[in-house]
Length: 129
Image (cartoon, rainbow, N blue to C red; front, side, top):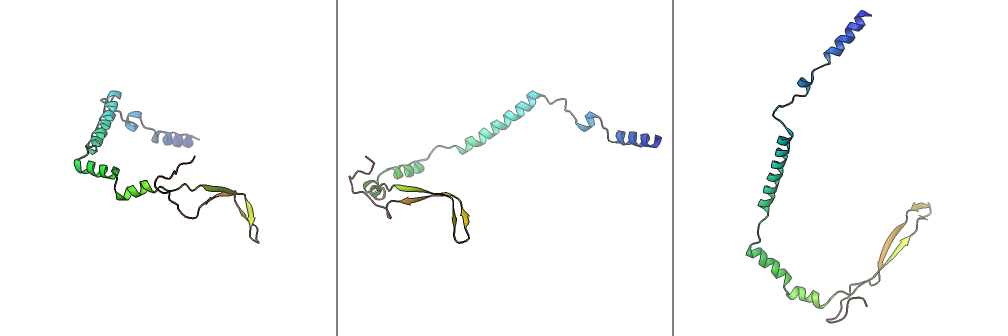
């Protein structure tokens, strides 16, 4: 019995350590220091992002303006608008298919009313009444 108590006490003392050894604490670290380091990281991130923000130069601005002005390509799209092609949405209920009776879950499918794309003539109304 004494040997068991001796072994048990030896086992418990071998696993024990003091808090300062296990979790060392820096005396100079305060919440204000931790907050200041976090704030400096945020400032560094803001500085890195501000480097990426740059004003548009004349070449980029001209390229963007050319996309907005009317040309032969986008004039055709403006004159000959696509006519609306409404869709018929149909729900297929769950069912059994084939000779084996394989279950098929319900699903939705879409059928366009017109087979091909149709264009309006210049000046023809394309919006719904």
